[in-house]
Length: 176
Image 1: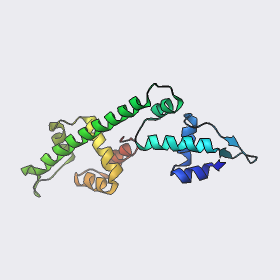
Image 2: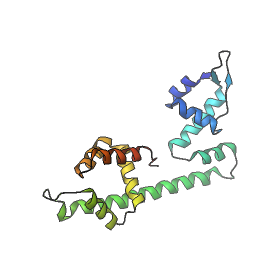
Image 3: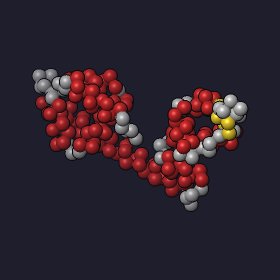
Image 4: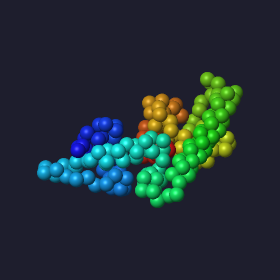
C-alpha cells in the first residue's frame, strides 16, 4: 500500500493533482487506513503510471478516461488526434517565429527605434496574429522565460501595473 505522499514523490505530482485525478475518476478513491489516511494499492499505482504517461504527452484528461476505461473503440484514434493537435501547435508556433524574425530584421528595429506596446501590437497584427495569438505568445513567453518576459514588457514602456496584468493573465492560462 502506498500513501499519497509516496505516490506524489514517485511520480513528481502535487497532492492536489493526485486528488484531482481521483475526483475525475482517473484513479479510484483509495482505501483508508485506521488513521483515515488514503492508502493506494499496486493496481492504483499502475493506473496512475498510465495516467502520468498519457498526461506527459499532452492527452486531455477526458481522453485518458476514455482510453483507460475502454469507452472508445480505438485508443490509437485518440492518440493520433493528440499528435495532430501537437503538429498544429508546432506549425502555428513556427509561423509566429518566422513572422517575429521578419519583424526583428526590419530596418525600423535599429537601436535608435523606440519600441512601444502600441507599435509592437500593431506589427504583430500586421503579421496576421490575432488577439488570441498574441496572448498565446505571451503565455508561452511567461511560462518559458518569466524574467525575460518581464524585461521585454518593461522595454515596451509598460507601467508596473500593466506588466503585472499581462503576467497574471499569462500565469493562469495553460499554454498547451
